[in-house]
Image (cartoon, rainbow, N blue to C red; front, side, top):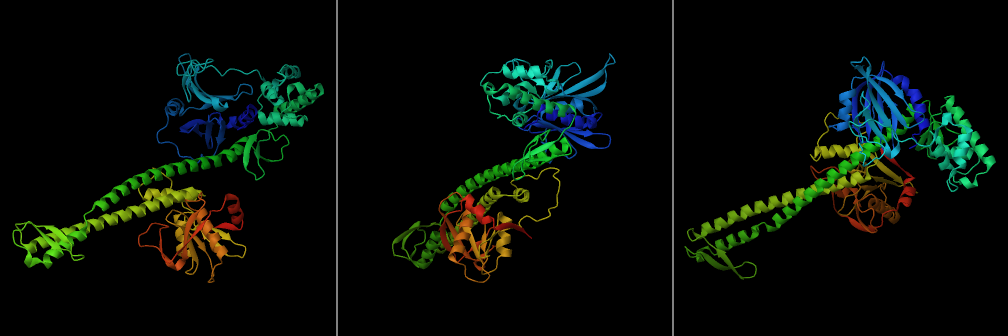
Length: 593
């Protein structure tokens, strides 16, 4: 992102009055950011210092970033809390147009009656960004990123070392730039150097986008080489630089967000410089809020989705291991029928068995072959039969229990795999919340401590996709388990057609028929949608079962989206490619009720 020295200057001009005398209330760390909760005179603010390689910045916002802070802060955050909480901000300074900010805090007075000053140094320089706490004696107390002399020959950033600023570049502050220096810097550059790079090397405070706009305003290509630059073009170029210098010196800031054709934010700048694909803001803080606050939600959603995916993978692995053991137990369970057969044989030939026998051979009921039966010589023949009947009853109960547990585990595994598919198809934060809550209810995840209870405007599961075919026929698609339940059990009529991938997780697809028989084309389209919204969406051939809705039912106690069906047919179809699907979905929508 283009958090340039000029942008930083404009931002500090705007926010410094609100920072002075504001006191640090709380400090949190979040990924590569540090959030300082401030108590100002009549408001509460959050100062964000990001040292992220891509989103490095300073930001002052009235809104608390929508993030979840770690339960245990990192060691540098703890250091900041120990030294800065309760202290007022007394000064905010930017040297020249460098991307460095010194934030001063005063903690009373020392023995020499001089103020005890702590300094928070914000170095906002892409992948070299850092946040450093300097004590009253000018020595480093701690840093977000430490580096020794072996790692950085210019300076050491470790506790106890004297703070030394990053090495200065050869560029000159735009506000102090003069024509002789500008011309000399460009003309003495290597012949093959691009003019854009020459401007960045020469002018402190600008970024690549501003360098490009300066060149274009002068009628020059940004890729033009220094050797191709004519003297009269250099004059035009200096005129454009002079304009930017005058705008900056007069404080004519135009906080601007650069956007693409669809209005999606791309970057931000302190001036519009005549760009049409942009949005203007009343201030730098509103601009940064509009740009970054949605990114927090997206990032939080990505992190949550990753955590849910990991939790599901772990649980599925555990359940598959359990299932394998149960299948082995079931296969090795004693055959109850064998015990009953032996007991029946003893009773049939009861009076032919001599008391005290330890074994006997009797003809089987099926084919007359000899069956050897072990007997207890101390028991009567009828008692031996009773013993085999007891073994039969016990083995039967054991095998039935093993089958029940095996079936239960298979159903649970199928549901987990369906949740995994739900997560892949997740489209909204509400979908994600529904899956997270389901995993909590299953005991796979622990409920978050102090998690705010928010009321949803729409219950998860009452939203679904609708596709309208050219003749007006509707197709309904559930994107998660609760939506699957809703479209199948509530929205579908008995004579509508239900589609689902065979023996794999996927969406329920309903073809609305209005009481008529569907055409072959409609059936194939619905089947291909069922294949597309399934675990096998990348396969070339997918088996899809379909039947009328009246043949689909939900077993008592079944999890959301889990159904049984009968009287079905099977089609083999190919999922839609992304382009075809988008064209089909143009006639569709997301419905909620």
